[in-house]
Amino acid sequence: RKEVEQDPGPFNVPEGATVAFNCTYSNSASQSFFWYRQDCRKEPKLLMSVYSSGNEDGRFTAQLNRASQYISLLIRDSKLSDSATYLCVVNIGTGGFKTIFGAGTRLFVKA
Amino acid sequence: DTAVSQTPKYLVTQMGNDKSIKCEQNLGHDTMYWYKQDSKKFLKIMFSYNNKELIINETVPNRFSPKSPDKAHLNLHINSLELGDSAVYFCASSQDFGASEQYFGPGTRLTVT
Image 1 (cartoon, rainbow over the protein chains, first blue to last red):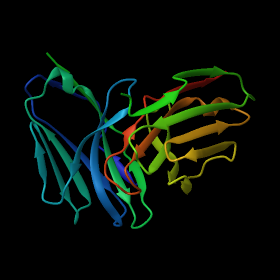
Image 2 (image 1 turned 135 degrees about the vertical axis):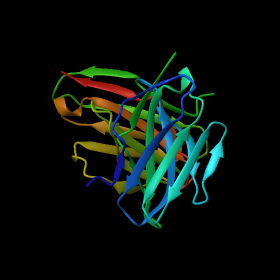
Image 3 (image 1 turned 45 degrees about the horizontal axis):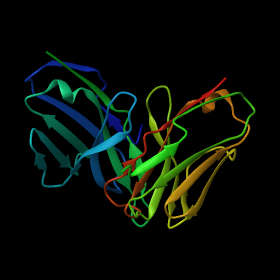
Image 4 (image 1 turned 90 degrees about the vertical axis):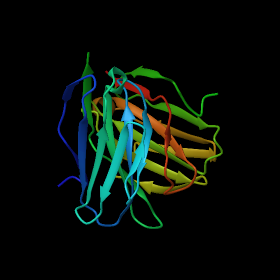
Protein backbone atom coordinates (compact mmCIF):
# COMPACT_ATOMS: atom_id res chain seq x y z
CA ARG A 1 0.00 0.00 0.00
CA LYS A 2 1.33 3.46 -0.89
CA GLU A 3 2.00 5.77 2.02
CA VAL A 4 -0.14 8.50 0.49
CA GLU A 5 -2.92 7.70 -1.95
CA GLN A 6 -5.08 10.08 -3.90
CA ASP A 7 -8.17 9.85 -6.06
CA PRO A 8 -7.27 8.76 -9.53
CA GLY A 9 -7.86 11.51 -12.08
CA PRO A 10 -8.41 13.30 -14.21
CA PHE A 11 -11.40 15.28 -13.03
CA ASN A 12 -13.15 17.17 -15.82
CA VAL A 13 -15.57 19.80 -14.52
CA PRO A 14 -17.32 22.88 -15.92
CA GLU A 15 -16.60 26.34 -14.63
CA GLY A 16 -18.52 27.06 -11.48
CA ALA A 17 -18.64 23.45 -10.36
CA THR A 18 -17.67 22.20 -6.93
CA VAL A 19 -15.07 19.47 -6.90
CA ALA A 20 -13.63 17.41 -4.05
CA PHE A 21 -10.35 15.55 -3.84
CA ASN A 22 -9.62 12.85 -1.32
CA CYS A 23 -6.37 11.55 0.06
CA THR A 24 -5.56 8.77 2.52
CA TYR A 25 -2.31 8.14 4.36
CA SER A 26 -1.14 4.94 5.96
CA ASN A 27 1.38 6.03 8.57
CA SER A 28 -0.14 6.94 11.91
CA ALA A 29 3.04 8.87 12.76
CA SER A 30 2.05 11.47 10.17
CA GLN A 31 2.31 14.89 11.74
CA SER A 32 1.44 17.56 9.24
CA PHE A 33 -0.55 17.72 6.05
CA PHE A 34 -0.71 19.96 3.01
CA TRP A 35 -2.16 20.43 -0.41
CA TYR A 36 0.19 21.60 -3.13
CA ARG A 37 -0.68 22.62 -6.64
CA GLN A 38 1.46 21.86 -9.66
CA ASP A 39 0.82 23.42 -13.04
CA CYS A 40 2.00 21.67 -16.19
CA ARG A 41 5.78 21.74 -16.47
CA LYS A 42 6.09 23.90 -13.36
CA GLU A 43 7.20 23.36 -9.79
CA PRO A 44 4.81 22.41 -6.98
CA LYS A 45 3.56 25.32 -4.86
CA LEU A 46 1.85 25.21 -1.52
CA LEU A 47 -1.90 25.71 -1.82
CA MET A 48 -2.76 25.34 1.84
CA SER A 49 -1.89 23.55 5.02
CA VAL A 50 -4.47 21.21 6.51
CA TYR A 51 -5.37 21.62 10.16
CA SER A 52 -7.24 19.24 12.42
CA SER A 53 -10.10 21.68 12.82
CA GLY A 54 -10.41 22.15 9.08
CA ASN A 55 -9.51 25.38 7.33
CA GLU A 56 -10.73 27.53 4.51
CA ASP A 57 -9.00 29.90 2.14
CA GLY A 58 -11.42 31.61 -0.18
CA ARG A 59 -12.95 28.98 -2.44
CA PHE A 60 -10.75 26.24 -1.00
CA THR A 61 -11.58 24.16 2.06
CA ALA A 62 -9.30 21.51 3.52
CA GLN A 63 -10.24 18.93 6.10
CA LEU A 64 -8.36 16.32 8.09
CA ASN A 65 -9.73 13.23 9.79
CA ARG A 66 -6.92 11.72 11.85
CA ALA A 67 -9.00 8.77 13.00
CA SER A 68 -9.68 7.71 9.41
CA GLN A 69 -6.29 8.97 8.17
CA TYR A 70 -8.05 10.96 5.50
CA ILE A 71 -7.55 14.42 4.02
CA SER A 72 -9.82 16.28 1.62
CA LEU A 73 -9.76 19.40 -0.51
CA LEU A 74 -12.94 21.07 -1.71
CA ILE A 75 -12.89 23.66 -4.47
CA ARG A 76 -16.03 25.73 -4.89
CA ASP A 77 -16.97 27.79 -7.94
CA SER A 78 -14.18 26.31 -10.07
CA LYS A 79 -12.29 28.66 -12.36
CA LEU A 80 -10.43 27.86 -15.54
CA SER A 81 -7.25 28.83 -13.70
CA ASP A 82 -7.82 26.05 -11.17
CA SER A 83 -6.80 23.53 -13.83
CA ALA A 84 -3.70 21.86 -12.43
CA THR A 85 -2.52 18.78 -10.56
CA TYR A 86 -3.29 18.77 -6.84
CA LEU A 87 -0.79 16.97 -4.63
CA CYS A 88 -1.57 15.66 -1.19
CA VAL A 89 1.52 15.90 1.03
CA VAL A 90 2.22 14.32 4.40
CA ASN A 91 5.11 14.86 6.79
CA ILE A 92 5.83 11.69 8.72
CA GLY A 93 7.74 11.32 11.93
CA THR A 94 8.83 13.23 14.96
CA GLY A 95 12.26 14.80 15.15
CA GLY A 96 13.19 13.42 11.77
CA PHE A 97 10.59 14.28 9.20
CA LYS A 98 10.06 12.59 5.90
CA THR A 99 7.89 14.30 3.31
CA ILE A 100 5.72 12.07 1.17
CA PHE A 101 3.91 13.37 -1.88
CA GLY A 102 0.85 11.69 -3.30
CA ALA A 103 0.82 10.95 -7.00
CA GLY A 104 -1.51 13.88 -7.60
CA THR A 105 -4.96 14.36 -9.05
CA ARG A 106 -5.32 16.18 -12.32
CA LEU A 107 -8.13 18.73 -12.61
CA PHE A 108 -9.40 20.19 -15.86
CA VAL A 109 -11.89 23.03 -15.59
CA LYS A 110 -13.64 23.78 -18.85
CA ALA A 111 -15.64 26.76 -20.03
CA ASP B 1 13.74 37.96 -6.76
CA THR B 2 13.91 34.22 -7.31
CA ALA B 3 13.59 32.38 -4.02
CA VAL B 4 14.94 28.98 -5.10
CA SER B 5 16.91 28.81 -8.31
CA GLN B 6 18.37 25.87 -10.19
CA THR B 7 20.78 25.58 -13.05
CA PRO B 8 20.63 24.37 -15.68
CA LYS B 9 16.94 24.34 -16.57
CA TYR B 10 17.47 21.71 -19.24
CA LEU B 11 20.22 19.13 -19.46
CA VAL B 12 20.62 16.66 -22.31
CA THR B 13 23.50 14.24 -22.07
CA GLN B 14 24.61 10.77 -23.04
CA MET B 15 24.71 7.64 -20.95
CA GLY B 16 27.85 7.28 -18.90
CA ASN B 17 28.52 10.99 -18.53
CA ASP B 18 28.83 12.84 -15.22
CA LYS B 19 26.76 15.97 -14.66
CA SER B 20 25.91 18.41 -11.88
CA ILE B 21 22.83 20.43 -11.04
CA LYS B 22 23.14 23.49 -8.83
CA CYS B 23 20.60 24.90 -6.44
CA GLU B 24 20.57 28.11 -4.45
CA GLN B 25 17.99 29.59 -2.10
CA ASN B 26 17.95 33.18 -0.88
CA LEU B 27 15.26 32.66 1.76
CA GLY B 28 17.60 32.09 4.68
CA HIS B 29 16.18 28.60 5.16
CA ASP B 30 18.02 25.92 7.10
CA THR B 31 16.78 22.90 5.18
CA MET B 32 17.13 21.96 1.54
CA TYR B 33 15.94 18.98 -0.48
CA TRP B 34 16.30 17.21 -3.78
CA TYR B 35 13.30 15.53 -5.39
CA LYS B 36 12.96 13.46 -8.53
CA GLN B 37 9.78 13.58 -10.61
CA ASP B 38 9.64 10.79 -13.15
CA SER B 39 7.61 10.43 -16.33
CA LYS B 40 4.59 9.29 -14.33
CA LYS B 41 4.75 12.62 -12.48
CA PHE B 42 5.42 10.93 -9.15
CA LEU B 43 7.47 13.27 -6.94
CA LYS B 44 9.87 11.42 -4.68
CA ILE B 45 12.32 12.80 -2.14
CA MET B 46 15.97 11.90 -2.65
CA PHE B 47 17.90 13.86 -0.03
CA SER B 48 17.31 16.29 2.80
CA TYR B 49 19.99 18.55 4.24
CA ASN B 50 19.65 20.53 7.43
CA ASN B 51 22.30 23.14 8.20
CA LYS B 52 24.58 21.58 5.60
CA GLU B 53 24.25 18.13 7.13
CA LEU B 54 22.65 15.17 5.38
CA ILE B 55 19.49 14.17 7.23
CA ILE B 56 17.68 11.92 4.81
CA ASN B 57 19.11 9.77 2.09
CA GLU B 58 16.38 7.76 0.49
CA THR B 59 17.11 4.66 -1.52
CA VAL B 60 19.10 6.47 -4.14
CA PRO B 61 22.00 4.90 -6.08
CA ASN B 62 25.36 6.07 -4.82
CA ARG B 63 25.95 7.53 -8.28
CA PHE B 64 24.00 10.47 -6.88
CA SER B 65 26.05 12.61 -4.52
CA PRO B 66 24.67 15.78 -2.99
CA LYS B 67 26.93 18.47 -1.65
CA SER B 68 26.05 21.45 0.48
CA PRO B 69 28.89 23.98 0.64
CA ASP B 70 26.73 26.28 2.77
CA LYS B 71 23.14 26.57 3.94
CA ALA B 72 22.08 28.44 0.82
CA HIS B 73 23.37 25.89 -1.68
CA LEU B 74 22.69 22.24 -2.35
CA ASN B 75 24.19 20.76 -5.48
CA LEU B 76 23.57 17.35 -6.98
CA HIS B 77 26.26 15.47 -8.83
CA ILE B 78 25.37 12.40 -10.85
CA ASN B 79 27.99 9.95 -12.05
CA SER B 80 27.68 7.46 -14.89
CA LEU B 81 24.28 8.64 -16.02
CA GLU B 82 21.75 6.00 -17.04
CA LEU B 83 18.62 6.18 -19.19
CA GLY B 84 16.48 5.74 -16.07
CA ASP B 85 17.88 8.93 -14.60
CA SER B 86 15.86 10.93 -17.10
CA ALA B 87 13.41 12.97 -15.05
CA VAL B 88 12.77 16.42 -13.67
CA TYR B 89 14.83 17.16 -10.59
CA PHE B 90 13.47 19.72 -8.16
CA CYS B 91 15.36 21.45 -5.43
CA ALA B 92 13.36 22.80 -2.49
CA SER B 93 13.93 24.52 0.82
CA SER B 94 12.05 25.04 4.06
CA GLN B 95 12.65 27.18 7.08
CA ASP B 96 13.65 24.21 9.19
CA PHE B 97 13.46 20.46 9.15
CA GLY B 98 9.89 19.32 9.46
CA ALA B 99 8.57 22.84 8.93
CA SER B 100 5.48 23.50 6.92
CA GLU B 101 5.95 25.02 3.55
CA GLN B 102 8.57 23.88 1.11
CA TYR B 103 9.55 26.25 -1.65
CA PHE B 104 10.52 24.59 -4.89
CA GLY B 105 12.91 25.62 -7.59
CA PRO B 106 11.76 25.61 -11.23
CA GLY B 107 13.19 22.16 -11.85
CA THR B 108 15.92 20.75 -14.07
CA ARG B 109 14.71 18.54 -16.90
CA LEU B 110 17.38 15.89 -17.41
CA THR B 111 17.31 13.76 -20.53
CA VAL B 112 19.79 10.94 -20.86
CA THR B 113 20.19 9.53 -24.38
